[in-house]
Length: 224
Length: 243
Image 1 (spheres, helix red, strand yellow):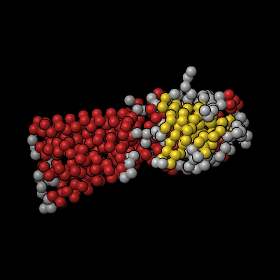
Image 2 (cartoon, one colour):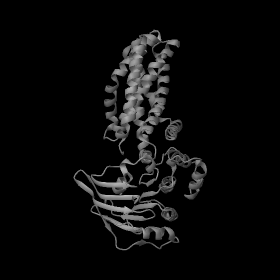
Image 3 (cartoon, chains in turn green, brown):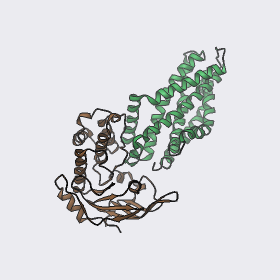
């Protein structure tokens, strides 16, 4: 637990100091949302919940992928990842700390993206946005777990940065569909119970990705 | 019989079809020091990486405390200090924050006095609150020395520790190695040349075409600092051998 807290605290401190991951995530998410707004509804004034939820998730997936890549790339500078691997902290703890940091950064990007989504898609700041919370939180957790695991593999490969989205997005598609559907129902004003089946699916994928990451991270990260 | 802190048995490493290490056998007892020399590309860093567990040998075994080094239990990893050609320091953290972070990783309680003493010991008191990104290579090497020695390791692997250090820094590094030997730490150090700063009593070897060869004369340089006799004699008594 001490190792987990130390690594997480260090990641947050580095982020507060440099702001590289969060700023990149937020900027990329916003850019994608802007493009989507004009691409999907050039005339403006859209209130299509499905389109809005889809645009939000596309932005989050690409921003989240980039965030995870940067997180482990930063550890490779000066060989710091090797120092972590040589320390008495076990690999599963390292995975949990990196995943938690990635989740926090994604959550911040989500909050910014939702704010912009409301403006660009002419939505209202009302209770429907709160109903987006569960699907976004579950989706971000699962995606953070998946990309943290895959970034450990991709970081050891030549052109791994290019490979990561090619690996992560197809594997996340079922959860992505559930996230978009859950988000669509929330934005359409349906009660939370209506999205229960999608939230359960997201939770199931979270369990899958978290378990896989916890068990396989040691092999994925290897000896660097 | 307890296992030696550092041991290589028939260690071989190849990259593709290029052999880098061939049948390397080495045993370093507690309190003993070994110096491995060799040209650029001789395989010194590869040997150190394998012994540290950062890689899987093509054949043979790299053992620390009798366990395969790449599958060390966390409790045994705690007893290893590695000074690599990379500093393992976070550029955007200050010197103090870096050392405090490593104290937390190694579960050192109440780290502040220890961190302060190491910062002063390596001569970085004036730069303690500066980010490592702004450090010179020599300052970074000094801090890396503190990082490697902070958890008081029982095995110390050092890849060209005197690189980038000024004479004062090199003497400091030599003194730290002597102190480690004196308290029973097994030390393996690599360098381009046999001649090293300070008065270090290390058993010299050379990597020649991937094979480890014992050099004739024992290394005992006499150029500056007074001899750390306890460590030197201890290391001679427990002189490592190529099997």
